[in-house]
Length: 233
Image 1 (tube, one colour):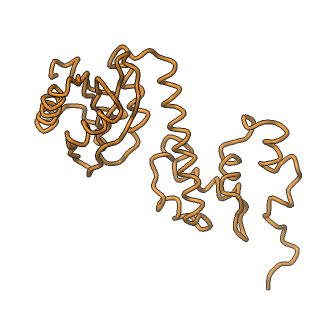
Image 2 (tube, rainbow, N blue to C red):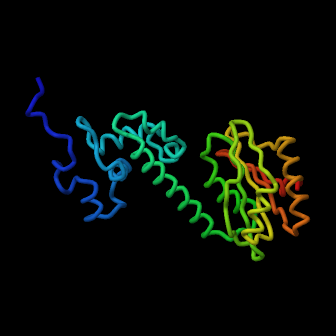
Image 3 (cartoon, rainbow, N blue to C red):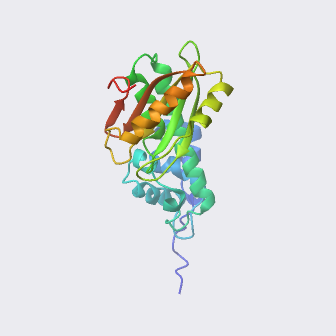
């Protein structure tokens, strides 16, 4: 028989100072723990667990590490009872906003002059993918970034980018130079023969449109490799 004296897990029954939304309103977002911030996104719990308790389960999926959490899929979040599709989408959207804010901040704080500057930005944008993606930075005459776009998504071991797609976007963005980039989920930063061949193919095609290929970066959590610095461009 159900114990009618069992305390409710609803956040509504908590002291006002302990409720995440009220705490944010009165004390600011910075004072909230990761689980409390996630609880606001989750919005409500289930019968036997509060939103904060569900949030702690979500954090456990990423070993209490927000960077690791950002690598998880919608299906990973939905493994937790009480996290349906809508809640999983909300969490994924928030993590992506955080990733983009980090990338934008990195870009605003530095003048893009070296491969290291570009690699810092690119790693922030694409290093968390568990499969290869091919991305391009489209720059104007002042070498300022007009546009960033992932132009191809592949498998665990490779992706193929179409030069026609890249150059079509370059013309639309009025770009005068490009930085190519792809990730290696394996962590190996050594370019393959296919990587080198694709780079040359794009470089030759861009030349006819007076568009310069400034560099091609391979990035991973371990670091980056620059084709320009390595004398391969």
